[in-house]
Length: 358
Image (cartoon, rainbow, N blue to C red):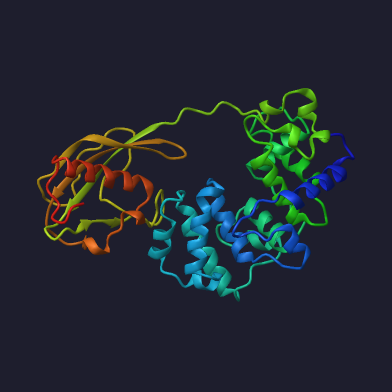
């Protein structure tokens, strides 16, 4: 993009957005905004936290359930930690759920109103630069510079920035700032996101349909699909662990809540070992005739691969959750994989029989 053309490109982008904005349960569309309808800051903030590292398709139902159960930030602030973590199960990156509660409680304690500026929002627990800018722009029309992965891709192509990521981030933020308008900055931010999600996609961008293709330096050079360039990622290490699935005679399941800090913090799961670089020694949570299953659970987190050996047993003791109070849907994904493997083995006769069926 040539210098000085930012306003013209921004106008073309907003014109396109007015006719092609995606419909989302948390969004106030351009026509509604033009009619004076204002976005609910609680909805904007909640959706942005949910959308971090997660797709729009995955978030829609979670957002609807959360807002039906906790219609306001005050309702969420008053919720039990375990209830929120259970509703979050499956979205991943569970530190977000813990920070969600901390932030909701901070907002509620301050009177129930979100700050209207990016600077004020950044002072809240768990809100970083991106979320602060997104909420400030979308909910309050502050001309904050909103840069997520979609925006990075659009900007890298508009200016043909060939510096590999993540080294290119400062330049991308600078260019995105030049494109951010004083009028309708919230619509502009969402238009950039929509453009990256639907047209300026990572692979095979639909340049012919792009409302700003006349300004795109990467298209002119024939390198749009190659940008943004990325530095080679280091290979993920593998960690190893053990998981123990125990049932009592009444069909109860032995569960524990993980420590607040660390991966899956505050979530329910099965007892087990730490996750280490080498296979850990057995560490059963109680005395029982444990059977090691022939298959293992494999799961990939952001920074490492995990391999879990799974043991099952019928046992007696304290801490068993009654079968009627246990829902596998409340478990994080890796623990659901442990549960599914134990269920499959029990049904195949390789594990102690479960009185009511697993």
